[in-house]
Length: 369
Ligand SMILES: [Fe+2]
Image (cartoon, rainbow, N blue to C red):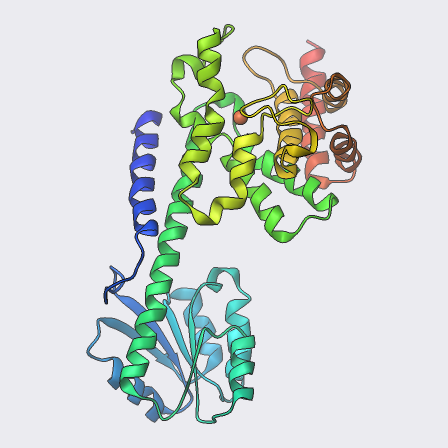
């Protein structure tokens, strides 16, 4: 069985490959995705499907077809489809309706759709594009135009796939970092839950909530670059060791920076150890200069650290944790308003309440010994 270090090394090298693939622009040149792309044609007319297949036959595509939108949805459940080509007018469900059904499923959000129609006119095109179609072509189809559009849509899909692959590896790496320390197991998941709950209470946008969720997992990813002798030292760190430990914020930002989709998460990774009075790191930012998302994550992070047992300290009860954090807020370290809101919502959130209850129970059990 691979050691934890080996798993991390594999994740890091996979990440580098995935990042390279995501960063190398899919253009220029007529490259096709590395694996054979699968295209699903949904058209009630057999002749139309045959014409399309003929136009694409000299390309290395795997082509599936159906005359019914409901069957198309069933195929999407089983097959990994790279491109959907659908007709605007079909019995049982229109092209735009099928388009909406496909795009509203987050698994297929980035599956490109090319919509075809017999009827010209901008109204149809607007309807198709509004429903989520990525391209629109009017029959009679020009073979070279069809091939060019199909190639372009498949190239974009391949780029999105590479990005997703890089993100998946990054998250796996973050979890590998967490799994190396038995005392922090589940920390990332709880942090993501708490931070999103606090973000929702503040009325943040979906994009900001997504950044908080990702930040819950990725905020400490830079610890992968910190030597074990420092990361797991049980005694106090020397000032040199402490400098190395603090660099996990910058290393984490460095690891995630190449991923454009992670841009909103970078301020969380860099600034989650700043303090309200400017005595934190790495930049000594003060008050509202500290990005709000970083302050939210920090509130959740400190709460979770206090309510979890570590080698050097027992777990505090939720009430004791809030009292400790309120004392720290009085000392100038924390955002007192955020902390007050977090305490407020902690009593109404099922996930937080259940975690808090189990922590309380664990605390009572430990205290009674
Ligand atoms: Fe950290």
